[in-house]
Length: 127
Image (tube, rainbow, N blue to C red; front, side, top):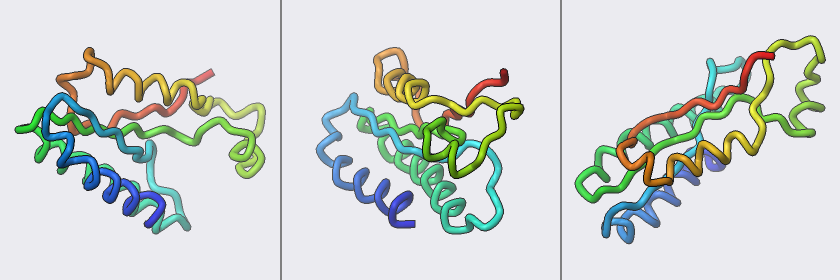
């Protein structure tokens, strides 16, 4: 809860007031996909990040503060591959860090200035 929800709340709260000059963006990280068993705190925290994102977007609207969340699937990293023991025959391709970063860059760009309160999934692609 601290690593996922509380940290997003505290960071957002710290920057929200100075951002009231307008045109600023907050990007949170939520979760793509259905909740997983035995991950109660994580699932609840990420659902809370999505709710925090939508609520802050409503509050930021009058100050032109955009607030969105990126929701990656399981990220393609060495540690995740080892821990999850992904099999080569698995059809789903996990998103790469670069793909997640590209979504963040888009959401803070002028092209995304009309997007706020959204949780944008970056789940990876099928092979």
